[in-house]
Length: 226
Image 1 (tube, rainbow, N blue to C red):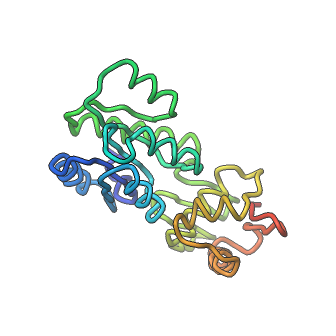
Image 2 (cartoon, rainbow, N blue to C red):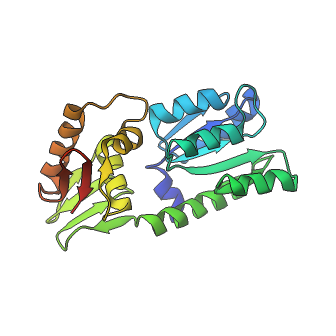
Image 3 (cartoon, rainbow, N blue to C red):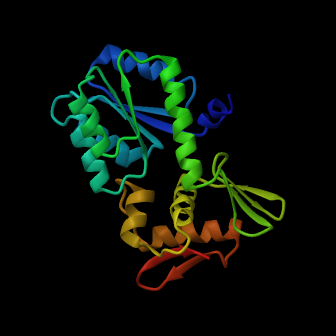
């Protein structure tokens, strides 16, 4: 199953207040993901998301302090781009409709099985491949391999670090758009504070790998991909 191979470069956040369930699911996920982060409620989940910027957020619904729907709404308010999965014991139509209205990508009923998880991850790759292909051809000679965090420039391969990869994903998500410094700060830096010198440093290193002409600074506004 090629999706399982692709998961090895992905990260996931599991938000679950019950210790035993959280431990069981996270133990299962650790076989497939590069990193598995866990949180005990919505507030903790929000902090963990902004600290690690995972590719997937999997959350329970009924939790103390901040429930799953409140967490997803807060992430939505902050332009979160992660794939979202609800794992819940609730089978009521009201909860399912609420999940749809909240833009949830997948709803899994407890107890969770490996088969249901694999179906969710397969759907995740189908979605991201429509938005952003696994390999983006910038030119005939320059390609970006997002699954393996690589830039292939005239057959030479350059690994991209986390911030370089996140910035490239953002810029490639809409090649006609100039992304503001605020958008870049949240999508690439998360809870960290982004200074202009910090983003310039990332862009400088990225240009050495992809070519100086491809990442363009629009003065006073932000960056876009040429």
